Length: 383
Ligand code: UDP
Image (cartoon, rainbow, N blue to C red; front, side, top):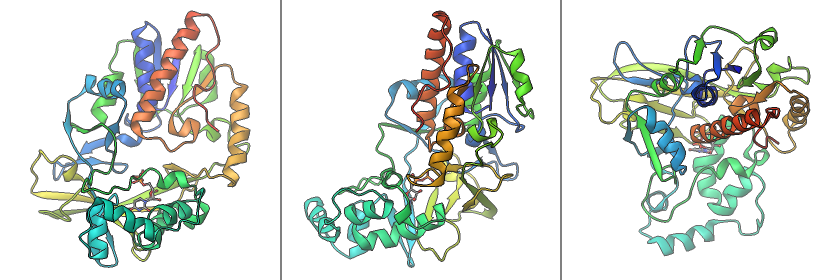
């Protein structure tokens, strides 16, 4: 059969490869002039530093199959994300761990004492935290909430944390030991030659044709048996229920001699500092040596129609929820399209989850083909 994949990020590449390996013909299009979507990375010409062009990406997962999958294509080197944050003129370790607690409060607590101490800081009257603010107040208390989360989150999402869901903060662990690994996952690493190479290699198959600089148009559908669409779901339906909200990011790039901040990611907790974080890209490749350095100051704002969509603004009670439900209803009436990925399903997805879901979509699509059934519009629950 003949398939069109819209967008050349992980979702499309993984699905195309699985179908191509079963002898199907796949055409992958992307309006950009490169593959890999927002994971795209390239070497900066002046400094030779591998730059994560659309912001920092760290591969981490508990899913052995996904880890093996990415390692099948390229070499990964061990990389542990150890984030720091600057708040009120001091630097602390994130995620909140025993070092953060002892440093911030000027104490020498052991894990048991620290747990009891943080519990004494917490607002235990909150029994079932719903919002970001409640989650923070309940689990780390007012001081940490205000130092590390309130200002950063206000900048990142443009709204007060009391209007955001608890799930956003649940991405971050709190630890009562000195483990400062930002992620809890079993597997973590960085591809030696960047992320672009992974997607290029996945796409390098005789049954896959990649067309860059090519925007999707509904008139293309006629030439294919089915379309896997990883573009924005509202764009597919020509925004007939209005535009879904996204946060976009602006990166102010600077180049310096030597080192800039001595670490890959420095967050800024104070609302008065206009950027959320500074990324120093050469620290994502600690096995390399560079005399110069490239940094990104990262600013978050509401996406305008022409901006790159990054984070879906999808909050219970927000207007996006009803809009999304309308788009999902339209999508469920489609017989020739499957919506995939971060933009196709309007969710905050990490790379490993994107790959896991794409593998599932490909497997389920292949069994649908084998059983002469229709390929479904969705293979994940979107709402
Ligand atoms: N967050 C925060 N302070 C920080 C880091 C994160 O308040 O120093 C909040 C913020 O709301 C963010 C969320 O926690 O959106 C999830 O953080 P993560 O680092 O997972 O965000 P990402 O790297 O995906 O942008």
